[in-house]
Image 1 (cartoon, rainbow, N blue to C red):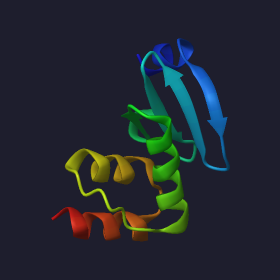
Image 2 (image 1 turned 45 degrees about the horizontal axis):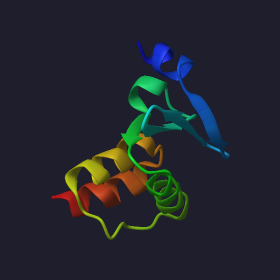
Image 3 (image 1 turned 90 degrees about the horizontal axis):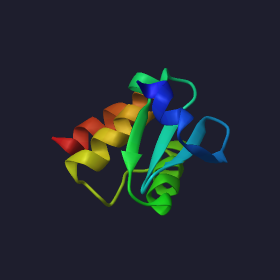
Length: 91
């Protein structure tokens, strides 16, 4: 199932640990250090993808505390310390 989604997508970004795919009207961010099934999230804007990557790479807490945004950061991070920081602000 997941491979099919990637098969219909266009990779538009590749950094050290992240890839971003354009799929229809949305984007998928994948942390390449994690299996796709547990290491990706869907977002609507490319800028949001880049903000998420910057936050994770710099271990910064987000201004946006929406449940989906925080859960997405947890999904695509592989840094246990950062994940704990996010869990603390998510309540």
